[in-house]
Image (tube, rainbow, N blue to C red):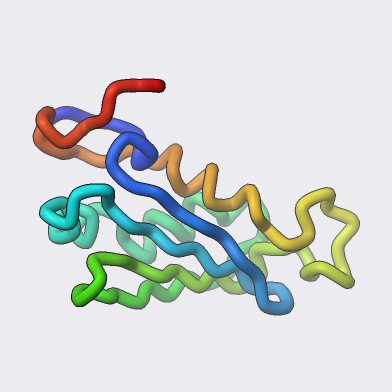
Amino acid sequence: MIEVPLHAVAHSRAGDKGNRGNLSLMPYDPALYPLLAEQVTEARVLELFRHRGATRCTRFDLPLIHAFNFVIDDVLEGGVNGSLNLDGHGKSLSFRLLALTVRVPACHARAPA
């Protein structure tokens, strides 16, 4: 097992609804879904965004499509209409999630581009 950033084994997209961020997470290889389920927890994701004021993280598991959806409350500093943040929609939040590290078998890690 090796430790890698999530972007080496998965991809993500971000969206928003009010002051909530919505992040998808999908492993490139569906075989990694159980490992990511163990390691990318609501608590770890909440801690990752706590500095932005996040108060709660709810993970929705989508095993039939080997994906996760994270809904993070109060992460957008007021949301699109209430924030002076340059990224009011929270589109860059997926990059922060993908920097989180996980442990996976070495054969699953992609080489850096």
